[in-house]
Length: 184
Length: 238
Image 1 (cartoon, rainbow over the protein chains, first blue to last red):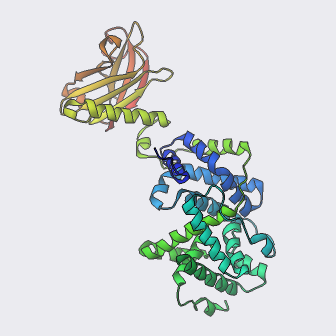
Image 2: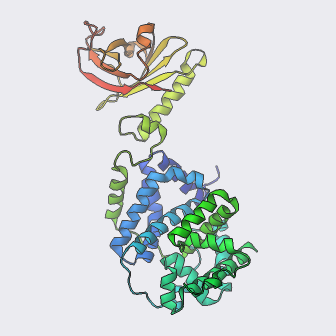
Image 3: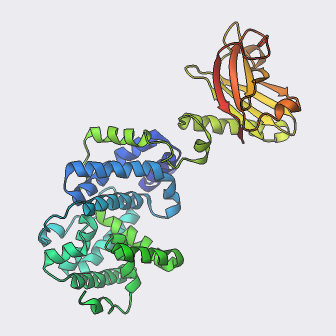
C-alpha cells in the first residue's frame, strides 16, 4: 500500500476527530501543537496568553473538525488559519500597546518552508517567497508583519510614521503585485 | 478622513486586494460584513479568499515551532472533552444517544447496522434498534425490530447470561408498566434469538426504552421485572 502523505495523515486524523475520537485528537495535538503554539507566541508575545489562545484553537478544532471537510482548504491551512485568527482576535482585544518600530532586519529574510512541508506545498511556498522577494523590501516586510504579527493598518502607520491611508494604498498595491506574480 | 481618493485608484485587481485584506483581517468590521455579503453571492471572490488563505498560510512556515508545556495538553483535553453539553455540534448519532458516547459506542452501532443488514429476514433492515451495554460488565445486547416480518431479533454480542439466572428484555413506554419481550439467549441457545411480537406489544416500541433485568431462570414469575435492571437504552429508528 502506498504510504500516506503527511497531508493525508492529518486529514485522516481530522476525520476521526469529527467522530469524537480522542486518540486521534491526541495524535493531532502531538503533531501540530509546536507549530500552532509558535504562531500564537509570535502574535501574542506572551507565553500565558499564547497558551490560552492555543487552548481555544484546539477546543475549536475538537468541536468543529467536521466543518473541515466542507471548507475546501488543505488541512494545515485550516489549522494555521484558525489558530492565527484566534490569536489575532485576542491581540486586538487587549489594551493598545505602543507600536514597535518597523525593524526590517527582524521581519525579513527567511528560512522558507519548514522541513515537514511536502513537495507540492514546498513549491507553492517557494513561489510565494519568490514573489515576496519581487516586492520592495519594506512592502514585503509589511505583508509578513500583517500576517505573522497581526499588525493593523493603524499600527503599520504608526510604525512607519505614515498616514493610514497611505499605508493602506501601499499594501493594497503590493498585494495586487504579489497576486499577479503568483498567478504567473 | 483624508486621502480617500488614493484608495480608489486601483483600476485592476481591486477585488483581489480586498480578498487579501479580508483574509489578513485588515478590514474594519462594517467593511468585512459588506464583503461577506458579496462573498455569499460571488464564487470568484470566494475563490480569491481561498487562494489567499492558502498562500498566506505558507508564511507560517517561517514561524519557529515551540513545544508547549506538557500541562497545556492536559488542560486542553479537559476543556475539549469536558465541554458543556449542547455547545458541541455532535454528529447525528451522538445527539440521538443519551449517554457519553465514544469510539466504542460508534463501533457498536456500526456493528449492529452491519449485523442487522446481514441477518434481517430477506435482507430486510430493522425499522427500530436498541443497544444495551451493561455497565461494569462485558455484556452487550442488541435488539432489532423487523416490522414487516413482525420479528424482534435479540443478539447477545458479548458477555454471558449470569449463571443461575436469566436476563429478560422489557419495553418501557412512557409511564406504562414494562412489558416483557422475551429472554436474552444464553450460551446453550447461541448468541441470537427471534421473537414474534404481538401487535399490541410491537406498537409500544417506537420512542420507548428497552430495558434488561436479571430474573430467576425462565424469566420473571410475575410478568413484571423482579430483579435488578442491568441496563436501558432508547429504541431508535434505524
